[in-house]
Image 1 (cartoon, rainbow, N blue to C red):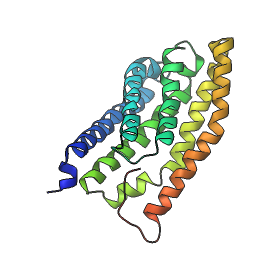
Image 2 (cartoon, rainbow, N blue to C red):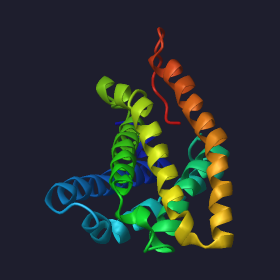
Image 3 (cartoon, helix red, strand yellow):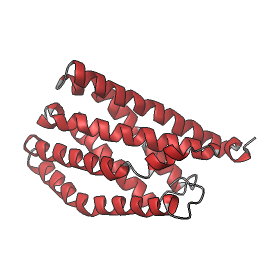
Length: 210
């Protein structure tokens, strides 16, 4: 029996990551099915609330990092979570009439996020059990090359499309947020590249969650 996975903190983490992977699978299949069957703006109308709820659950990751349950850098984790919360709450909920919500970039946003998170949470859950297949490790540390830029592009485009709807003061706030994407993307992207070298380098060691 894996005593690491059976300890109370790790039982919680295995459950959280497994549930999160399942929830993001809902986002993925909803987005694909509705995109093919109905298209926009129906994709947004029918997925908006549940997508916001699922993304909001990621706040737990900040708590896990702060309390030391996981070894993820607190600042990096918080940056990624809050940038997404800005989208789901600051645009999808606060600006429901924004043209960004009925645009194709909402679809690419959901696809980029959901595929990334299905892989990431599945990797974490299996890692805690000590049963990570090589193909899942490869996906975790390779797909970000495409999914991160696609996700960031979709986020930035959503914000740009929302500027006119946001009003004067909130519009300026969103413009300031756009500026932070430059160092933020560089920080997260290079961090993942370094992690990939550690895990999939010439002398690959047992993968650890980040």
